[in-house]
Image (cartoon, rainbow, N blue to C red; front, side, top):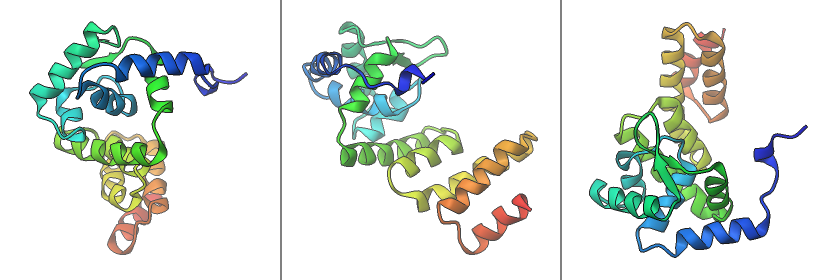
Length: 178
């Protein structure tokens, strides 16, 4: 009983959706690539820095993607893909180096937009820069502790160690995990 999201998409579906996204005027395809790696709801404040755009340019790209039937307004505000298949197809079409680069830029955008520490850390990790994720994992751990979410705090602490926490960072995480 596999999760349907883990099943590979048919090549024709991927090709059709990717072609549709890439046929839109720039910078819309670039914004959609970044959106495919961001968690919904996503905003211009998050994606603009990841795409080297102003927030106005990102919003104009969102408008084009809405008109093309690829994005919708998210019920919590911001934007989301009209269907998970669109997000999955765009994500699967990204080359690994490009994916890592976008994740690193999303980490910076999430940081600037006030994203959660766990989200920033996850983007740095997916971007192949785990060392930069360490302080964000520590913040996520501290937030979880304040909420008395001990299992979550432990998970963040363990990930900070796996990411290479050293010196005082390692000691701070170790105090929580002991």
